[in-house]
Amino acid sequence: MKYTIVTTLLALSTTAASAYTITHIYIKDNDIIRTDIKQAKEGSPGHTYVHLDGNTCEIIEGSAAAADWIKTSSDKQYLILFNDYVDMKQLKACKTKMKLSGKAYGDLSDMNKEKNIFLSITEYGLRWPCSIASINKISTAKEINIAAKPFYAQKKSERTMRKNSFGGGGRFSPDGNYLALSLPNFSCRKGSYPGVYDTRTWKKVEFTSPDVDARCDALFPNLPTPSRTLQPLCVDEDFNEY
Image (cartoon, rainbow, N blue to C red; front, side):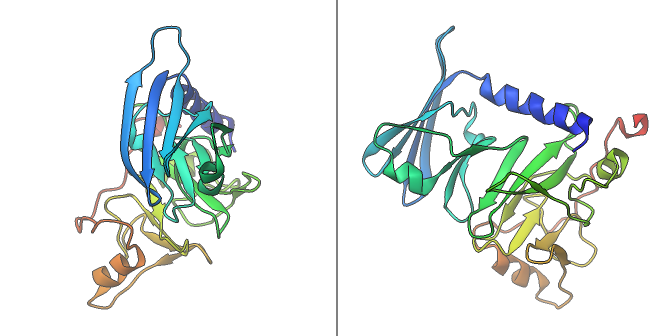
């Protein structure tokens, strides 16, 4: 990945890790039911505690300074803490403390254990919400080069990826077969962008039948009904500088 992208991602990673908080996460039936976050005392390290099945486990070095950085993966197999993650199976076996299962750079949006992939979102700078999607193998963290426009690929130029960037994050379907981008406005309508992708082929999913919206919604029972308003492409205010 190009140096300019890595620099941005490292900055994001550092921001999350340097936010010293005392975080308590309560999980029931593999769903987060409550998070309590408060600032740690000045000079004190942060701590993250997960309360699950009547047990409390401290996540060593895990940090998430905002509630919306904490979520479970769509397949309920991972607990995501911004750009860190914990395997739920390991978490359930934890008695007192455990290390992180892994780390990603950028905004770790979702994971799927069966497909062995995770989605991270790369933001191009701090003044605009333009992003590109990166798909990596969980087992190796190796990036998968995908030709479709909204995805990272090593052969793509920085300018090309910025041009095809979009606003919003993404989530997999529970079975991992589909990926919706630009939440909460994803769509399977023809011509929509960035749209929905089949993770088995990385081809765009587009329906042309009258029930296009219902068919698209059925792919993602884990997501709320999206907005039907087509969103404009993300415009990078400093794009002409590159």
